[in-house]
Length: 158
Image (cartoon, rainbow, N blue to C red):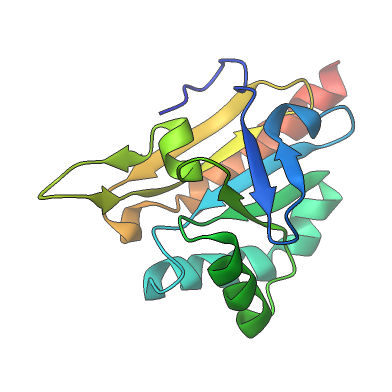
């Protein structure tokens, strides 16, 4: 799992249109928050995405761009995005899942996908990284809010 304070890795994911999305290519003018769903069929994860949708204006006002990463393939991700009317880019892995690329893949009683979130600031530094095996613990709203508020504070002092 990524560590807070470390540089964001140069990971290349793919959006539902097949376009490459580089984690390192989204800095300069805004931060990036990526929510990693356990699966698109996870009801708890879907509630977390709905919370992000409700908060999108607040996050946009803080110059935070939201992405949702799913372990399914691009076709399944595109169908889920359309069916649920997700306004954020939905990302998949090009080779393996996005989760494995940042350390959220875990073997427990076979294969169990974790969920979590990562906030990367405009300088490419990880400011929040959280993961959990149980989906109820994979979205730490308070920690995300605190990390976004800290970005605001850093921006004023820079």
